[in-house]
Length: 235
Image 1 (cartoon, rainbow, N blue to C red):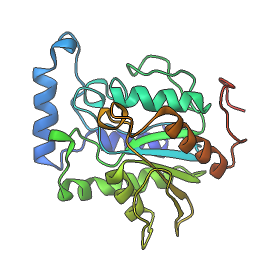
Image 2: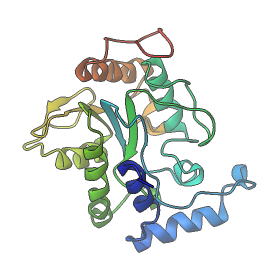
Image 3: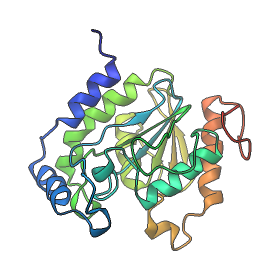
Image 4: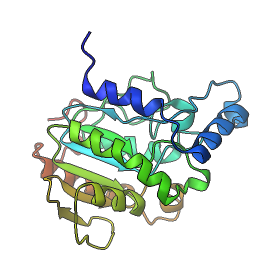
């Protein structure tokens, strides 16, 4: 039976054990768990991307959260950053619901694909340069398989640096919210502050700021203008 290329890559990603420190950490977190999730079975493996395989918009984050994607098995699912991201995708008409708490919660993306620069939860959310570089080929291949890709939204400076490298952006503009740059391989790279609590609790990133990024992503991707308030499905 023919296996679609993205499914084949997903299988490779989820079985990866190239980084001993990350393997040890993700499995330790999965075994000791957080009290609030004590009754849940943690994923405890690398987390692949997910979404619409024909998406013109890809969203790249840093890495799965220890008790978010590392628990649920889906990037940004089940953590505070994901609460902000999926609500923004929903408002932009790129998701069918504004929340995501589990892999079987009915979330669907249309026109968007979400992935991370590093696929395992790192201690203190800080992958080493070597860990980043070992994961880089997965990002290269996954983006390459999104055949209609036109925009890459980088959430935070780490994701921006990795995405800029993968997309051949040289020299690259200084990172900043709303910064955008065309890349030699085609897609436009668009920056946003990461929707981490450090940014959302302090007001450095607001909902209107995040909405503006996804409105711009829709425009750059050729989707029909801003979808604000129009609900699902997207126009």
